[in-house]
Length: 308
Image 1: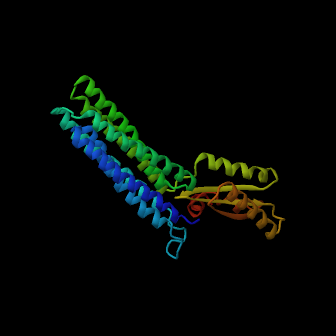
Image 2: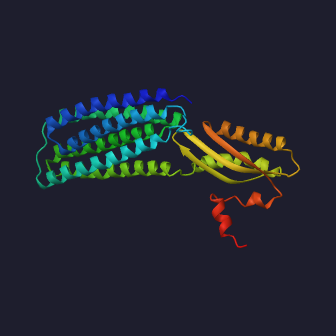
Image 3: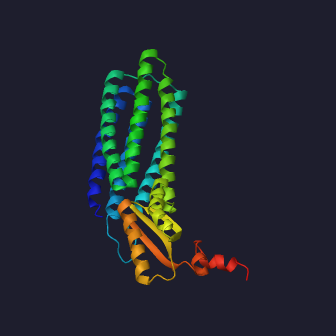
């Protein structure tokens, strides 16, 4: 599947980040609010993350080659992992600035104008986030999903910041602004941890989601009722691609041609139900003990452990 067109979504994210950084920077200069400063810093992280996603999507779109026979899709996990770490780093910076301002509170100025400018930036982030999230679901791109969720987290934190600044305007309590900044740092940290955890799971070849596995099981059920067995089902995901392998056990009196036809049929049904899947089946006879001795991943180690 050609995925070069996904690069345009990264460019959209970069353009939005640039505009939002300018808007929130102006809002901070006008108000002196540490919360708005923290919001602007997070937008800087958005810019860096969008640039990383751009390069990752370009690399992932390259077709398989001699050195990367399974393709380059997995680079998207590196992109989302880097973004998660950047988010956590930004949260630490925001927390340090907020704690310093909490110890030494300072008044916030020109609240109405600053809030109006920051609100425009949040609306831009929200719109871009929705576009990226829809694209990530359509094209199964974790790099775009991480970018979208990061932008949406920015929207939520911006809403909290605007509420905090508004409360300061109503109460005059200067400590409210840095306190909101600390809460924002905690929320951003949780977002960064979630993004990093998903990326690590992908790099460690975690199994497909439960709903995908249920789809595979539903496809195999009629074959099992017809006397065909399957085992050693293994699944993983690499970027947008799914990888599925299993052993198909057929009656020993079947010809190789007949067994192969059934295996091809199973593969075709899975690919139709789960698009962009690489499905590999291994044909075995039902009546041989060796057919049931290779269920484990490390077959040689299992055989060595068995008593003679």
